[in-house]
Amino acid sequence: MSKDIYNFYYYFKLLVKHTYLVKFLFKSLDSDTRLAVIADMKRLASDEKKILEINSDPVGNLQYYFVQNRIFRSIFYARCRRESIGNRRIGFLWAICKHYYPAHDSIGINTDKIGAGLLIHHGPVTVGREVIIGNNVSLNGGDIIGRRHGGSPVLRDNVRIGANASVVGPIEIGENSIIGAGSVVVKDVPANMVVAGNPARVLHERTNENPGCVQRKTDSV
Picture (cartoon, one colour):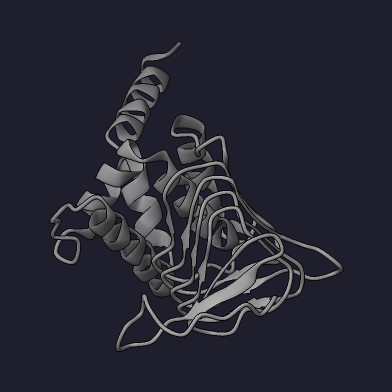
């Protein structure tokens, strides 16, 4: 190996080791994607009860979470995938980062329609290719969000889905709704509802005054 090739390989490995390539990849993304990544970090920091100056140092926090949290890494790669198509620079950086810092094995995010502030507490999680995810959505281990009867779900803003839930088919989960653990949802859920069961049924409605206690219902959804 010639000296020039050795030097290139050495400095390239150094860039990867110190996650500078992640910094370059982040800065190559469009502004909306960068804001969505920052929102992901804010939700993760809030969930971990950490006080981080994310607005003042987004790149530094990105490098920290990129190395320390493989689930965050999986969401970040899913956001980069759409922009990697047709952009050789982003595609190259994306591929190199994925090689040296693999995504979480049990997190399968196949859609690129992801709102800002997505939080996945733990895996496994499977999200279909045609699923649409709004802002500030929360998922948990064992969740399956996918296609059924020719369509895929739309998760509106602030939806929370408990562990081991299945949300499938051409349905819409209204904003601020909560899906209980182990639920199977195959019909639309109105906004501000708490549902659970197999098949899922409305338990009660959430309100601004008292989000946890209102009139109970038993409607199947």
